[in-house]
View (cartoon, rainbow, N blue to C red):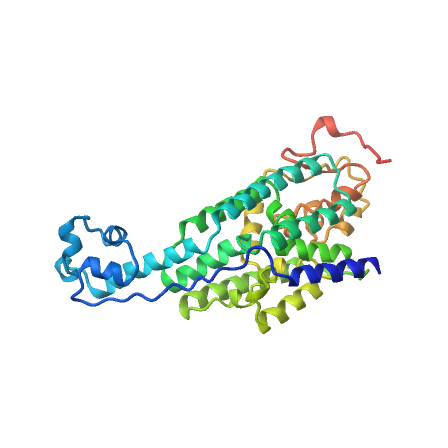
Length: 370
C-alpha cells in the first residue's frame, strides 16, 4: 500500500507542469527575391546583415550591403540555404535556457562524483539507491525539465542534420560531455542522472512484481541497433523524427504530450515494473552510443576472481546480466548502469567499483561481510 501511494503521488507530480517545458523549434521559412539587396534580404528575414554576409562569405561593407544578390554570383538556392541555416541555428539558440542548462550539467557532475565515491566505499544499499533515483528524476526531470537529456543530444542531432543538413555546435558539446560522463564511470549519467532513465529504474526498484523479466542482451541490443538504424535512415530519407514523435522525456513537459506519445509512455512505465529500463535497452539512441563508450570507462565493476566464492549472488542481483558476462570473461557485455546491486550482495568484496583491477596481490585474502 505504501508503494502504491508513492507511485500515485509520483504520477500526479509528473502530470503537473514542470518548470521548464520543451520550447518550439520550428524555424520560420526563408523569403527571397532575386532583385533584393543584401540589406533587404536581411530585413525581410529578420536577420543581421553582418551575419548573413559572413554566412555567404562576403565582406561586410556599405557597398556589399547595398548590392543585389546577383552581383556576387550566388544562386537563389545557395542564398536560401544560407538564410535557412541562420534561421534554424537562431531558433535552436533561442529555444535554450542556457543558465538552466549550465545548472543541470553542474549538478550532473556533482552527482557523478558523489556516485563514484559511494560505490568505491560500497555504501550504496538498495534502499539508498531507491531514494537517489527518486531524487534524480525529481530534480532533473520534474523541477528542471526535459531538456537537455542524454537521448536528445543524439536524436536531435541526427534529426536536424537529416532534415536541414545543419549541425548545432552546442548539441555536439553536450553529447561529448554526456559521453565523457560515461567514460568516467560506466553509464553514470544514465544510471544516476538521466531523467527518464532514473524514473524507469525507480519504478523497477519499488515494483511489487516479484518475478522480473530479463530478455537476453543479444535480443535487446539487436532491437536497439535496428531502431537506431531505422531512425537514421528515416531522418535522412523522409525526413521524419519518429523517435521525437514518441519522445518519453515529454512526460516532464506534459503540454507537449500527444495521444500517441502518452500511450507509449504509459506502456513504458508499466513495463518498467517488471522489465529493467525498457526504453534504455530497446530504443534509446544514447543508450546505444553510451554502451559503446562503456568499453572505455575508467571506473567500472572490477572482479577479483581469487576472492570470488562463486555464490552467484551478483548474477541474480544484476538487472542487466552484466556481471554474468563479466564473470564469464565475455568480450561483449550488456549495459552496466552502475546501479551497485552486485556490490551490495557480494559477501567477499570480490566485486569493486574502481579504476584499477580488483585482482591485485594486496587484495587476495577473502573478507566475509558481517
